[in-house]
Image (tube, rainbow, N blue to C red; front, side, top):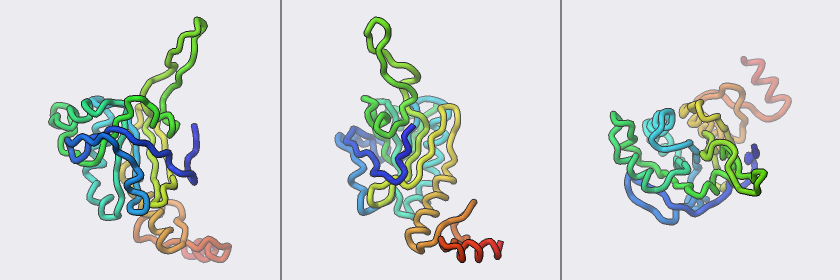
Length: 210
């Protein structure tokens, strides 16, 4: 599994569904560089079980992300038509109607491959035939990308393990606090907490207070 933290986020151009039902043929993260932070997350498949709970949780907290000038973007290996159908299915029928942030189609699996979250890999068998070993879907990867297009935080969960949207929001707050104040964020830091100067004296001062 690659660690992308500190590196430029892999860019791509792909089909997506935005605003709950509009097709975009050439969606890219480049549109946010210099303008917004991005929470870019992968989920395994549309019309599944854990995935809608995560996506609806991101939508529930979307105003909080937008208040922080953060774009939320989801991605799976489904087609844009599958995304569109799921976005137009009522919640009580297993759908995610009401979700407005972009859902990217990674039908070729190249985006998942470039972010190294594909839950398997292509290989050749003894007969020289190509086959896929593992699950041909993405793990639950999440990447916090700054305005320069650099990954500053990543977390990857196995398929059965849903993520904490509140933790993603906390990491946004921590990154923005550091960018604005130059102070680092100690363990379990939350918005409104005191930061810490990244010096021996700063550590001693912080620990002395806590």
